[in-house]
Image (cartoon, helix red, strand yellow):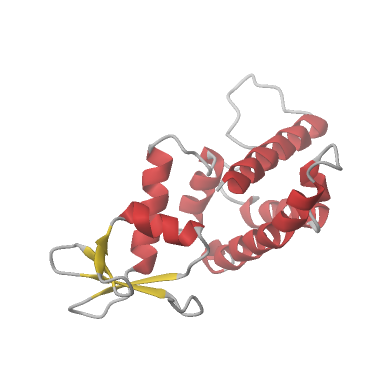
Length: 186
């Protein structure tokens, strides 16, 4: 029986093949994604240099899923992530994303329990309202000064009327509900 407390060690050989050290066989990116979906932590290292390649391969897995039409990350989020690499926000974004996903993980089991008893299961997630407010304040504070970011999604074309606050909130709620739905399917 494998020890699931420590990360599953995957070694990358010079041929770029990935080797599972627990089962002594070669694995694919899809296999690695399966281990992660099953709740296993994974560490990928280069056999020759010892460099940790985990981040590189996880990003590659996300990119492959996104390119296959399994879109979880809205264009606006991807755009804001790219912008964050060129601003002073770079140091804040990782903590914010980690805290947001931690809240989603913590609330997911509660949401699944309450799925049948509440008409809106997203609202049943513990801390949902606090998370929504935290994200709204963070985005307004950190992104408000960036060119092209209006706080309401894509840039407006000339002649577009500004969206009403209720419409913006409804759009954000819909996007969050879609994201939670996709996360729960994973």
